[in-house]
Structure formats: structure tokens, C-alpha cells
Image 1 (tube, rainbow, N blue to C red):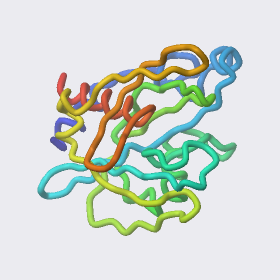
Image 2 (image 1 turned 135 degrees about the vertical axis):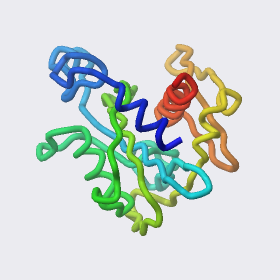
Image 3 (image 1 turned 45 degrees about the vertical axis):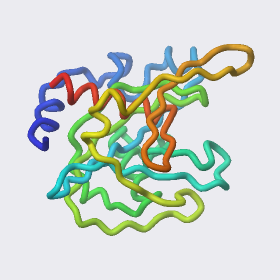
Image 4 (image 1 turned 90 degrees about the vertical axis):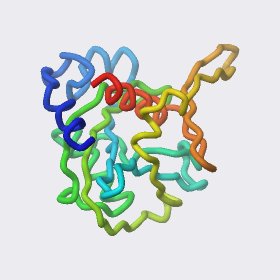
Length: 200
């Protein structure tokens, strides 16, 4: 599986220049102004355990002003010091769960996703060799947990649901895992990564 992941992102050829596709950084000025989007990045942390790969996820605290209690990847908005989305994702990951950038082998970028909350989010896939020692930011992260990489590769693991918001129907992915209800952007990224692995 390790070699498959490396091969997937090794094969990717894209232009990182502004405005040149879903993996460009920063997002194009025309796209940003049109949708009033702010650039952001998240780390998709894959733990390379001896008995199989696992994806590390966080559960946000109930006191967070945005998305309280939701399941998420570590990450956040681009700051002025960040030149690349990799820097944003790694910086935010260290702030949220105490994982040093030196422990992450960045494999590549997934397609960016726009959110209803006004962000254009770039997922950065990173490989991590255990053991790792984490220190959670108590105001942001309630806990962390892992899900098997094989779980997200199974199409039976997710479904599409519909919600009504402001009189309109919105479809979104859900991916229940044990007591965790994974949905929204996090589920979208997991579904896309699972498909990339299945199609490889």
C-alpha cells in the first residue's frame, strides 16, 4: 500500500502556478474574489503501522466557534508566512496536535475543495512512521482517532445524504465509523482518496 500511495502522487503532473487548476496555490484572484474564498489547507495524515495503514482524524471541541464537535483533518487558513499549502497544513497540524513537520513525509496534493463557510481547502497527503507523540491543543481538539485506509477504499463505507438549508436541498457524503459520524468536507476528501486508491 505504501508503494501504491507513492506511485499515485509520483504520477501526478500539474502546474502549481496561480489559476492553473485545482492543485494550484494560491487560489486564483478571479476565483477568490468571485466566491469570496480564503485559501486554506489540511493534512491527510496516514500512519504507516506494521499491521496496516490508518488515517488520523481529529474531533473538534464543542467550544469551537466553527464546526464544533465535528470530525476533521488537522489544518486551517493560510497565513502570511505560508508560501505553500504544505507549509500551512504542517504548521496547523503542529499547532493542533503537536506533530512536528519532520515526522511527515509529504506525498502530494489532492484537488482543492470550496466550502460553504468561505474557504478553498487544499488537502495535503502525508505519510507518518509511528511511533508519534501527540500533544492536543485543548481549546481546539477534543481527541484524535484512526480509521483504516482499507475502510475508505470500500464504497460501502459511505453514502450520500440530503439536507435542507435555506429552502434548498444539499447533498453531502457521510461515512459513519464506530461511534464517529464523519461528513462534509472531511468525508468528501476521504471518498476522493479512496477512489484514487481503488482506481490505481
